[in-house]
Amino acid sequence: MTRLGETLRAYQARDPAARSRVEIFLLYPGVHAILYHRLAHWLYRRSLLFLARLVSQWSRFWTGIEIHPGATIGRRFVIDHGMGIVIGETAEIGDDCLIYHGVTLGGTGKDQGKRHPTLGNNVMVSTGAKVLGPFKVGDGARIAANAVVLSEIPPDATAVGVPARVVRIAGEKVDYASSVDQIHVTDPVQKELQALSSRLEWLEQYIDEQARGKNV
Ligand SMILES: CC(C)(COP(=O)(O)OP(=O)(O)OC[C@H]1O[C@@H](n2cnc3c(N)ncnc32)[C@H](O)[C@@H]1OP(=O)(O)O)[C@@H](O)C(=O)NCCC(=O)NCCS
Image 1: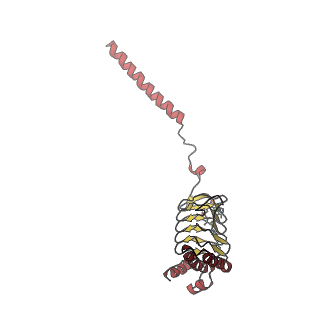
Image 2: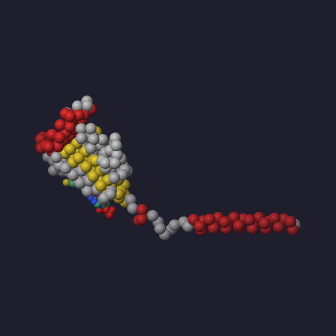
Image 3: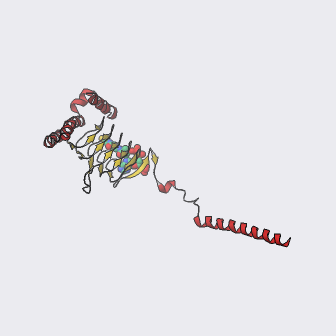
């Protein structure tokens, strides 16, 4: 009950259209999918695989959200709108994550065993985004709408596009071309020449001193 209460509060906090907790409990497919998943996961962990799958498919039928019974989901998980969501068997989702309709947390078909992504805490996966493969999406990361993420995303990053690339970390632009100083660049050849020249100067001084010493 505590977990249900905090999940309902998370919906209220994240969905500006959400009104009362009663309404969220009765009418939000994301809440229903999570409740069904808890039962399915409980059955899955006791190797009652057929029953687990039955519950998960029943949930999919009612909510349009397909969560494999094996998926591990943290607390206060919010699925906004629901519909067209797929969460794979070995997917792991941290606490306080938010996903929208049309999201897939899936595999590429190339991996065995752990095939699906791991979302850290407080990750947002926007509408239509696909996160494919057994890598980590760091805490606080934001995956943009319709992005296709195929490799690890660092914490607090914003990833956009197909295939997804990181464009912000903690709100700061990640743009090599514009952040690198291409004018005041140190020339390595010039550095070596300077070193040689100062060595030569020292040698000349040394020879002069030796020569002067002999004349005395
Ligand atoms: C990714 C998102 C969360 C914004 O995150 P953010 O960290 O605030 O990033 P910004 O808005 O500063 O955008 C960063 C850059 O990515 C670009 N970008 C943002 N979303 C993008 C997308 N879906 N596809 C491609 N590029 C995108 C921006 O134009 C910006 O480009 P720039 O570097 O050239 O300026 C937001 O754009 C998004 O996709 N929200 C969708 C939420 C959703 O699913 N809503 C459904 C409600 S029903």
